[in-house]
Image (cartoon, rainbow, N blue to C red; front, side, top):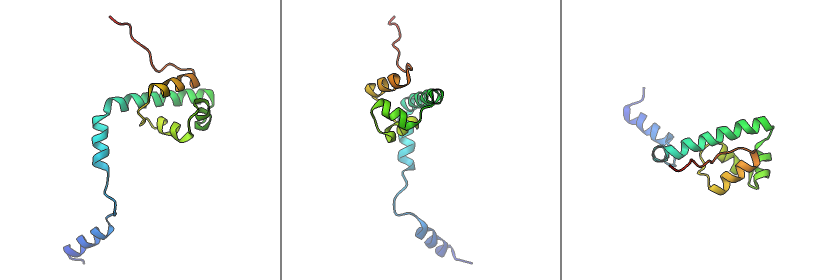
Length: 104
């Protein structure tokens, strides 16, 4: 049976050289909770519409004039979308993402 010091030494050897980013990722999610939620709603809407239209990520990327990798990031719901990108999505999928409420 290994001593406590031997067990600690073994665990330290197994520790990866790169530090974990879990804390930074958790803080990012906490700080950006609202736009992440909206981004995920947009991604879900896009996926539903893509399925209806029989579109793959590559097809959508071509319609939007962007890379398939960028579409993939959008569909993961983690991309902070610009107004320009939202308009491209709306035009490519024939959906409405943005709508202005009547000013009271």
